[in-house]
Amino acid sequence: MEKIFEPFIGPNGWYCHFEGHVGVGLTKQEAEREAVNKYDIAMEKHYMGTMKNQVTAEMEITGNDIHEVLEARGRRYGEYHMVAQLSQALKEALQVSPSWVHMEPHQQESLEMICNKVSRICNGDPFYVDSWRDIAGYAQLVVNELEKSQ
Image (cartoon, rainbow, N blue to C red; front, side, top):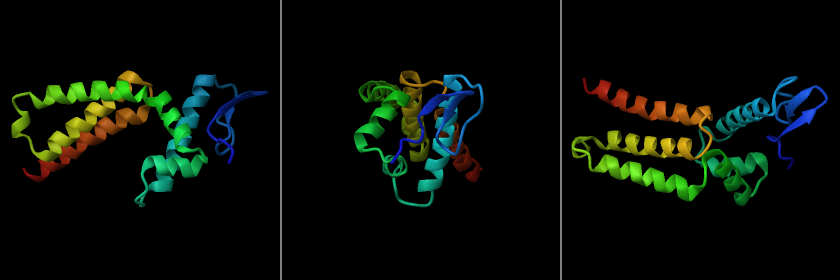
């Protein structure tokens, strides 16, 4: 299967192979970001409502093997060992804070997931909007639970 998310230069600017061109006269960075956005929409449609994880869905959509998928994720999120190191350090800081033991499991889980997203942002692409949306989403889940108990 053709790797459909790689931007390429054409006679009128940058394009990507996903659902046609992404615009005329774009910069390479703009074309790459547009390709990522189109890709994310395809991923969401592909595995929404299924039990597939994101890596499996990505392999099926792109035709890439696990090594290619992990390499692409490394480019987006940073080197895994660096992401893990920062994420664990952030989680350790949370777990020794005075309020940690008083939090509900959903609050602790959301904070830990946010640590992972912050680590990905700090080690990878800080302009990848979905990482920021994920942080907002985990915070919103806690807000929803807190509002239920009021």
